[in-house]
Length: 64
Image 1 (tube, rainbow, N blue to C red):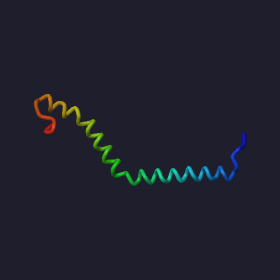
Image 2: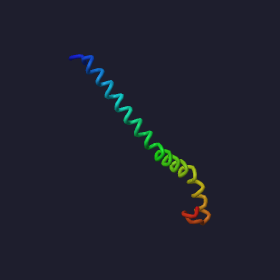
Image 3: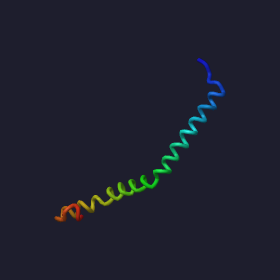
Image 4: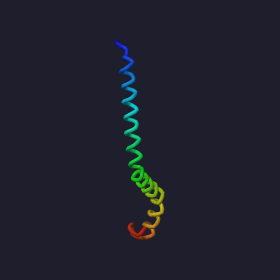
């Protein structure tokens, strides 16, 4: 088995760093959308027992 040459090892490191930069830039660009979705999911989970309580009391779901 042949060991990787030093120039190819440097190329692999550079490629991995470039991928990391692209991924982090995408996360940064989508941060506003991601935060909104996470907040909506959090409130849906937290407020579900309260909505269920209102539904049991006879209030329709859109109003609850």
